[in-house]
Length: 301
Image (cartoon, rainbow, N blue to C red; front, side, top):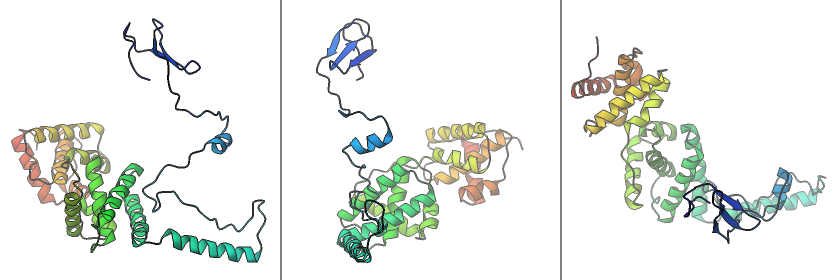
């Protein structure tokens, strides 16, 4: 429990679970005398005891078609003592597994989720996305399925659009070009599906901040932390003056990294920066001139 003692203003409080009281360590005032202990009523001294005594299962996982709440029939064909079961019993277990699988994926929605979540996991893994983004993406995909938004659209297209949406929300620098390359779906199709899902599910997506791309570009170009900080300063100043409006965030970020590298004495060619950022040299050159002119940056030739 976090709080402050109303008598002496001290924040150091003691929790006495035996008496169910919260006591101020300084003046001894009892702040609560009916404290609820949310922990288990049993004790465990090793992992085996903890596994046997706890009465709750694994958390719900949206990445699983059945959210992880399912009975599984293993394929070991052994009894409780570890001995092999008879051929008749093996045939019976085979039939059980077959019908169990069929009953688990009975509706068209469940079949769709089985295919889509597998594709989502593959794409997210290739893009290096963390588990929390995968879970949030799976939840958003389920909402799209429940609302009937995937009808007439490729599963891969919706999965890619959902992942792009969550990358934008979590501030993860992944471009449409990267997602398109991994999924094999044209960038235009992913963008069209993204806008449709965003509109129909009322998803709020923040504008892409070019600052998010700086650490990634600098890391791939083997630039120091000082260059990263200088590039971020340039971008924050440009954002404050409204210079990035209507410009692609990757191009602006790449130009800022290029300028910062030159200023800090870690020059990289425009071609090297363009290859890492996935933009053309012309784009970097144009953004470079704009930032240099509008921010009054002086660069020695």
